[in-house]
Image (cartoon, rainbow, N blue to C red; front, side, top):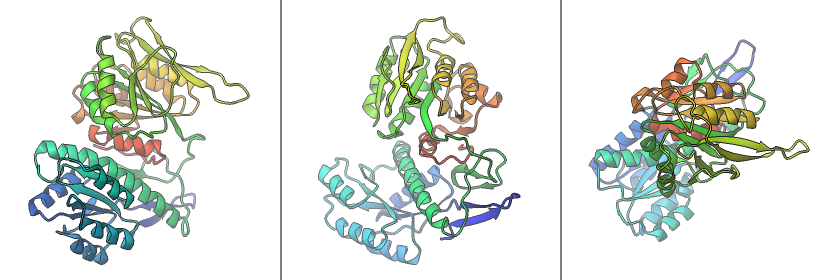
Length: 401
């Protein structure tokens, strides 16, 4: 596939950009379910190229010989049995092709999942293959969105290394894009990147419609996110603990209601308790080393008629973090978060706002957009994918609607 392309900027540098083409092969014996899987994948990204589906492993190998694919969606029988031979042949002949194994069985066999993992599949999805309802489509789309996004990012990293042998790769900056690639990513002639582009903390502000939106987002974030997640959800004092408990049961990373004085740690999501402002405070480590961060809870007056307040949290993050911050403003009424994002922008912040059509109330995101503080507008279903791209260092700009 013609993956590397380039164009020249006015300063004489050559920028290499990657085609958005990402090819998926579906291996499924049911004609009806093939169509269902193709619709689910197109809903994730219309830029994905779907190869002509095949019914079995023999067809898959023949298809890949004609034209390689980036990802194979392989329906397997459980116990794995004959499917093992197909997996072995795919792995041996096409080691760079990602494989997602799927089973129609509703009861996952841990031995089968372990065997598939040892054979190098990206994931083993069980219970998919019987239901083609809208609920099933939504559930599968959420699972595949993150898997496809992560495999695509790994592929891109590998191909960038290959492109470097023949081209100059220049870091991408933000506005005034001249080329658009998959999932809305924008490439342009570069400006200097910030001196410390690594994101140190993820901060989320959300209100009306937030519990359901967080239930869609948080379970898609991996346990090894690598940074802490601080959340202000406008809720009464009696409800934030149960929200944290509910999310913790669904999530890979740890989710808990924040407690006074606890250290802010990576791979943990902290939800501000209802009725209390949550503030991040720093303890200096001395000798130029970064200090530890701690949470403080206060009963200071409401800000923007809210306690906890997004502005209060974000302002404290601006005071205590020296590196890059990723701020996310999600569904909610009012304008809480605008001044907090403004403060963060002075400290190297990148801001995502949830798109109007995926919000219950488009108040808080609208306020950030109209203030000119949103770097990207991202639909709820794509938000976890985009967060992971940015946290892992893939940061071209674009609206994901």
